[in-house]
Image (cartoon, rainbow, N blue to C red; front, side, top):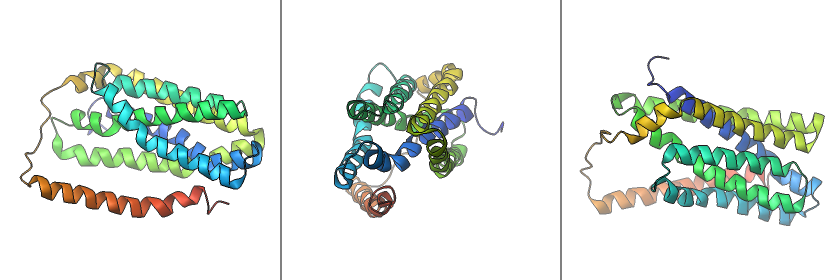
Length: 235
């Protein structure tokens, strides 16, 4: 593990904990809305869709704070705390707390999405050849969390009720915050490092734009059927 720079494994572990809570909620939210809070299937699907959309838009707001004085690490830490509060509010099993909780989770998830790639790029500035390997590890841990969290969340719900599942998600974000704080000094030092090595791009601007738009189109084609697993296919 000495292959990775100091702070990287802590960053990876915090991302895995944050994704654990998010995917736990994503796998149970539709059933929670429909079976526990009494929303119709159409209403529950609409709420789920709006929530997922908010998690993709919230990084834009978080980015504005990141580019200011707060920085990536502070914004990610704040996002973990905000999301943990949101998950805890969901345990109240109230429609009012539902909307507030989902809003906080969406904001927290948006803030957390900024950290992995941005900080990892700085951590691997001295060894750019290891950058892709490091990001692969982060994504691997995130996907393992996505695999196990629905099973653990449903087990907690079946044995102890809905509040237990959301409490578990909240605790996973608390764990993410604690892990990040343990190495915050190292991560902030890497964030301040301005000598990040970058390869000069030789492609023209229009070609890059076409490539980005093409990747976005492929991402849409992948995401649309993928998101049905937790909504229409689940029903």
